[in-house]
Image (cartoon, rainbow, N blue to C red):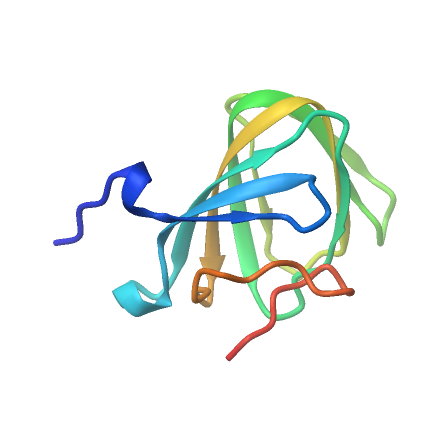
Length: 124
């Protein structure tokens, strides 16, 4: 059994100042996925394209919008909304009000990753 408190987990700050992520479950935990609590700061606009990972995101608080760059479709993100990037979807996440998000990545990450120029995490 794995039991962790937030204070015990690795907190990663975005070098561009748009988010922070508390990495609670990582590759080393052997669960087959990683689990993070991510804060997106107000007025952030982040282009991402997880070519190496699938991601599922559940909004705990705050609000914003996600736009699929392939079909230009946008969706409001608010508490109670989940989105899943099941096709390695290239997207932009815009934040109107600071958002807290619960994020799951498959395959799991190591824990210190930040986005590369493509908006993805590298894979080991």
